[in-house]
Each structure stands twice: as structure tokens, then as C-alpha cells.
Image 1 (tube, rainbow, N blue to C red):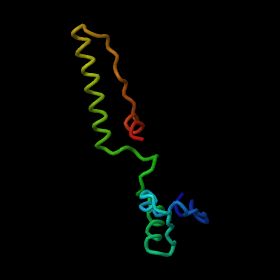
Image 2: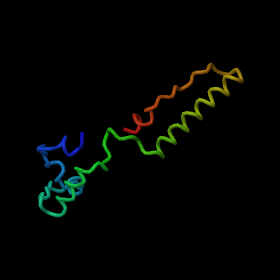
Image 3: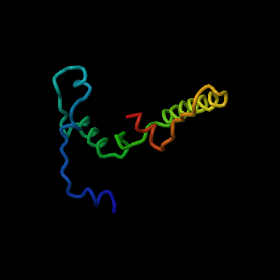
Image 4: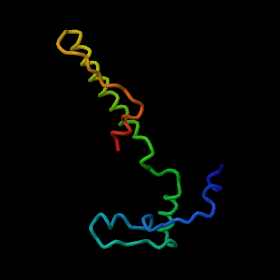
Length: 104
């Protein structure tokens, strides 16, 4: 099923999309763009594009790589301590989405 067929006749509430977030975070009175203005049209286009970062998207590759490196280092350290007879082996189990869950 195509995206245009799924979204046919949908009504969108653009109040959050048209909000000027730069002025909002500066503490200035909230300003909303007009849907017909260039800034408002751009905000709506970004909202409808699939290029947005959402909670459903994965963590960046650099973060996942660093996360896995830290886990492997900890597990290797535990293995070395166990081989020396200094500690019991308690490894951190790998799960496919751990880096993504810790990112959010």
C-alpha cells in the first residue's frame, strides 16, 4: 500500500509544526508561522518528509559503535579477572537494541 493512499483525506493538526521553536526556547512569546509563509511551508514539508528523526529511529552509528566497544571492553576485563582467579564471571549480555534504548 503506497504512502499517498494511506494518507489520503487525512487531516493534520499543524499547531506544533508551525510553532517557532527558536523563539520558544529563548523564552520569548510563542509565535506561530502562517501555513502560507515560506517558513510555514518549509516546516510543513519537513513534517511530511520521512527524513525526520523520531523515537522510532535508531541511534546514530557512532553512538552504537562506542556503546558496543564499551560493552566488549567490560566483558573482556571480567574474563581476564576470572582467568586470574580474582572474580566470578558476570558478563553483560548483548541485546540487539541496547544502544538504541540507552540513546533515548
